[in-house]
Amino acid sequence: MLTYSRWDDHTFGVCIASYPGDLRFALGTIESVRFFLGDVPICIVWDGPGDLPALRRAYGLHVLHLGNTRDPWLREHSFGFGWTKMVAFWEAPFQRFLYSDADAILWGDVVRCATHEHGNSWDVIFDKPGAPSTPEDMDRWFLHLEPASRLIPGFDWRAHLPDFANTGVFLVRTGSLDLSWYRTVKQLAVDHPELFLAGQQ
Image 1 (cartoon, rainbow, N blue to C red):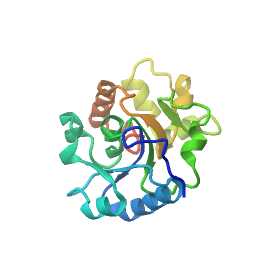
Image 2: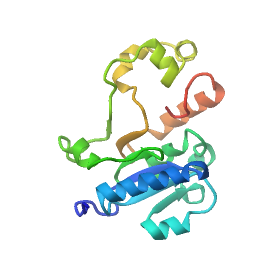
Image 3: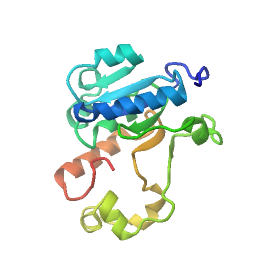
Image 4: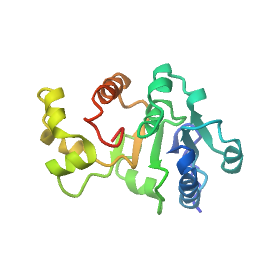
């Protein structure tokens, strides 16, 4: 087992979003983090009742939930399916973190693999698709192109192809995403539910 002595409690950690329906999967993710990353701090972004006292004691977890989210807009608008993970972008208790969905298992020292070329100079690291997305890919995984072209004048999705990726696992610097931009996009998703797929994706 690795010991992440190079990280203190406020420098780096792992965030996992979960709700009562997938907590059993989150336990598997937590166990894989402990096995491969040792004592790196873990934060559960919890969309459910309470603050998971038994898990906090068993694993030494941070729990970020509705009751301790500082930003009132995030408390009101960013909990629920497909959106809970976004709270960590601004409220995670770490300067940088590895985010993992609750249905993923870490295998190996993914943090060292992902950051060995970048040190601590990165804002976001994510896995880019092996091939450019097609219009069919966009409609299936990200956003529906017809309403997007109608609602976002001048939006050229092909010009942004490197920026489309699955959001199940990534590394990010806390606060690197503009909250006002996210609020605009979230309102667009509320006003036009046909636009985006899979919540924050």
